[in-house]
Length: 299
Image 1: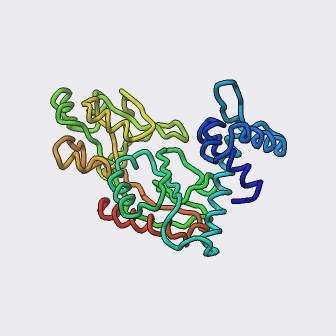
Image 2: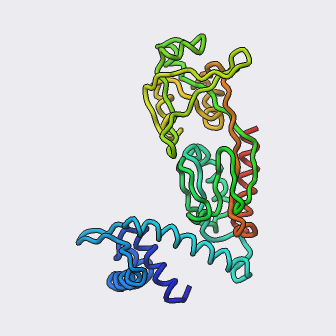
Image 3: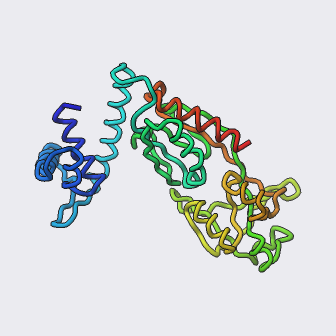
């Protein structure tokens, strides 16, 4: 990007991501003072302050945080336009920004396999249970749990997963195996809290054809499932977790399923990407690769 405007945006993004004018300058091959002057001109043009500055560090202001999101989108759209116009190779190369829910850390074996097959693609991975704005935040592909309604997005629906109530044999040996749902009130329940709403995810059971959501204690609460899995594996209690991340431990006997026949909780899984990225080779191969592997695993 040779335009001075793009150069200013690139200087801003590098400074924001590295937290340093000096490091941003090193990456761009210019001096830190040049970065500082560029940022100052950018702030003057926008009439907002993008960074808080001290003698030791810089930090984004609230306006800077918003502007960074816009810059990611601008660069992503520019790259997409270049590829669509045939100005770059049609091979799957370049930066690919992918968003996963926190349980995506349990899928690293798939991600590593993708890296091995497509080494020219630079993965930029984001693991979070917050509901990201795919287009506004400049994501190329996002895995989403649950329903999706956004006309700007294309979607590949995968086979869904269900939740299982699990604990370790050591925990059960110490506290006993619950015989009925009401027994859970005397157990150490490890609960999931939705990051976006702050509400606890309910545990839903089927009893005589009716759904049942009992009031349960909470020995610990976390807003990502990987943390809950770690606590369960540490013999700290019972948790409701996706079968996608507990199946191997169940097969190995490291975890025991509780009320498996009456736990009622199924979720849809989809891969999403902006319509503007539809024909990018890097997006196409990532969606195809991950969909084929995840569908086999979820089956």
